[in-house]
Length: 106
View 1 (cartoon, rainbow, N blue to C red):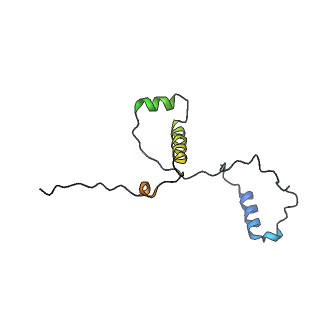
View 2: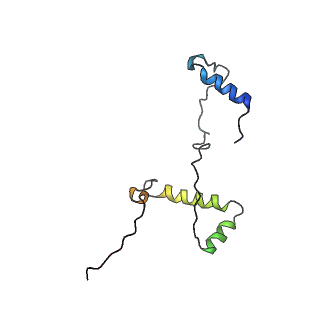
View 3: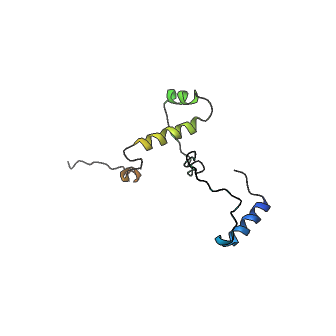
């Protein structure tokens, strides 16, 4: 996305200062047909950098489809997440793992 120009910022500030009732929307047609709307088209969740160790053949397969293998990994993982029982992270999976040692009482 491009940065806003000074003029765009000024226009936004002027509209923000107005009351809703004072904004003229008469030149904008009302959308009645939403059948071609795309959900989440402009939403982009924040990204975090991670390091993963994957098998070489998996990386070769992902890169075999061309540029953007990391995006492809993200899409595959998102699909797996959405295909899980309810599409959400379980509370157990969200908790940080704690390594415990089992000690014998001998």
